Image (cartoon, rainbow, N blue to C red):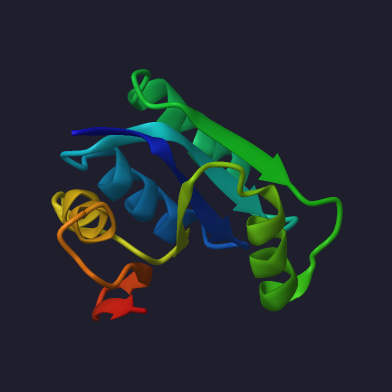
Length: 131
């Protein structure tokens, strides 16, 4: 299923090998979404090259990279992900998060289920938090 109301942000710093696996798992997802943003925390390894190769390998996926001018630390990079989130829903992953092909569809079904009296505010690998 396609979710135009979903963006995915992947946080990374100097873990290009893990990032490659994470991005490939996202690109192999059964679901599609508006765009994926890689939020690069001023990596000094080959992170940018890895992202460029993934963009070439998956031309039907919209993937962007934003590179911080300086390393903001993990909490700072996470805060920046919240600041750049502009869509109705945002999924945030880290560079070492590889997902199951059905994960996005399952998570979005929890969020978008109009039968729920309570609305989820967060969905994680362990379940959903309903309010």
